[in-house]
Length: 116
Image 1 (tube, rainbow, N blue to C red):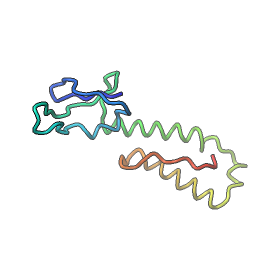
Image 2 (image 1 turned 180 degrees about the horizontal axis):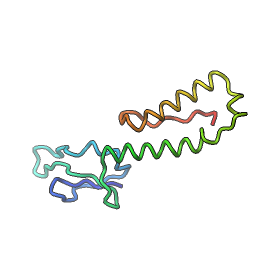
Image 3 (image 1 turned 120 degrees about the horizontal axis):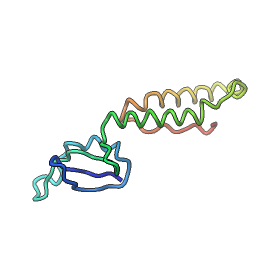
């Protein structure tokens, strides 16, 4: 759940979902040319934490750390030595996608290869 406030700090709307990826809405004019027109001033979660690009990047880095801890960090040498060249390439591509994910907000969350 996230909360949308106008520039005067008045709560204008609520929505379900992840508030961090809504940071790009700040400054958007809502209901343009209508009686209830307003400009989005800030977006927060239920605890009042503001959505920002920096918070989203940090959240994506934490996602990456968790994903690697559940996959790459648990892989042993024997398992790695028995991968095919195609599997090694697939893991490398997936790993690079995760390395790029936090800093490029246009990217979607990388899909884990089935071999994990």
